[in-house]
Amino acid sequence: MRYSHASKAVVLSAALALTLSACGGGSDDSAGGEADGSYVVTANTTEPQNGLLPANTNEVGGGRVMDLLFTGLVSYDAKGAPVNELAESIETKDSQNYTIKIKSGQTFSDGSPVTAASFVDAWNFGAAAKNAQLNSYFFESIKGFDKVNAEKSKEDKMEGLKVVDDTTFTVELSQPESDFPLRLGYTAFMPLPEAAFEDPKAFGEKPVGNGPYKLTEWNHDVNLKMDVNEKYDGPRKAANGGIDFKVYQSTDSAYQDLVSGNLDVLDQIPPSQLASYQSDLGDRSVNSPYAGNATITIPGYLDHFKQDEEGNLRRAAISRAIDRQLIIDKVYQGGKVIAKDFTAPVLEGYDDKLPGSEVLEFDDAEAKKLWADADKISKWDADKEFSIGYNVDGAGNKEFVEAIVNQLKNNLGINATAKSFSSFKELRAKVTAYTMTGAFRTGWQADYPSLYNFLGPLFGTGAGSNDGKYSSKEFDESLAKGLAATDPTEGAKIFNESQEILFKDLPAIPLWYQAVQGGWSENVANVEFGWNGVPIYNEITGK
Image (cartoon, rainbow, N blue to C red; front, side, top):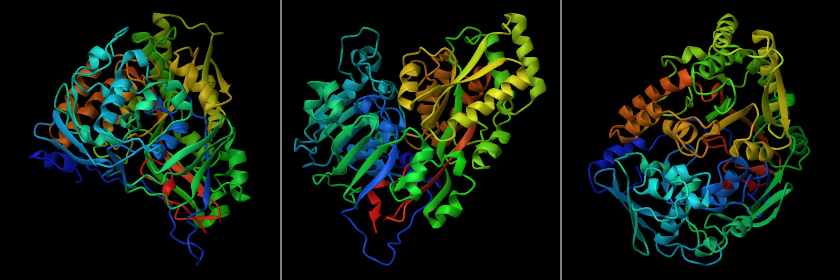
């Protein structure tokens, strides 16, 4: 437990300092020689969807860059336990009112100071409706969020945030939430320099952060180059000379670059190589579960899939028509595990026997019955297309979506089709604009180690990652009750009860839990993949 608490709240936060076992890979072998700390590591990525602003980055292409570009009050170690970064202390007596002290003398990479106002101003900017930030939902616990985030609101300062002095600020929440400190390592809570607010759009293209690296080049759809930030003074110091993220349109070509030595780290092995990559790479490979899942989202704004009896029946029919294990075996060589809930098994409080979870079990006869029951309410036109969108620059997306489409054709007799998008950025642009005309592949890589992180940001009313526009008062109230629990075990129990509502509504259809299947070249050492499936880039060295 690394938070400095002033009361019995110590016990609560200690229980929240989760230790996960989802990290994998790793080698401190430098081939018998000295590690090369000047080596620039090359790694794969996808093009970020938006400019690099903390509160507007909620996808992996931008996320992996932001985690190196910025540092917040806490970070997470390889096993998911929180580690103080800029926080000197986070104190509370009631889990509702927090006093946060930051370390003095910290600066952004341009030399400007990191102060308490750097956090308060960034959080207010992220929450305000007028700034339309995708991660605004993460601030909803703070008192006054509802006012600044209301549609057409011109207010931009939350009542619950107060700057005390240059190194101290206070946070008042709308209700007690004992896991609040655990969230503070997520991108949305990063600080911003004053220059960011003068022209946020321009800043997003050339961001100035305070993390272990600084962005020196962003050649869109080609690469993002990061140099070491010499002004960084924290636990994640760079052991290398920088990171060059290469944007790939295909993981097959990324893999070829890996085996030929033109790419150092790859965190997604393409399906075409899953049967052989471990023999190809030997001890330079990893296959390990992490806090992530894969889903299909059918937006509630589509005809026949509204949040009503017909929509629920059709989503349940589609879920039961999918033979998940067959796809895992054929596409992923058995490298995934069938989902039994909406979270991930590596998280504290996970339960694989929740009531209602049978809707995730393959049963083609039941699927046909459910679809027929929906037809009794409103007939589905036999010629009507049911499409599932996917991005071609992600490993296995084409293969698994086409497999699901074929199963829906065979098991439901509908005109199911796979719809390709050239990039994750292109797909996410339509998803976040709510202009999709069919279903689409989704998934979640944890922001912080908590069951809530797989529920609130994705399915809470108005949440920034709520891709299907799902809204349930019952679900929202259950989440709020879980957050307010003073005992983490009781909180997890309530979050799991919340999932019983999701099994009925299926705002997304869980498919399987993720495992990181990756590898690295002979040019690097000290490679480890963390609790969330992301390589720990700052620790990688050249050989």
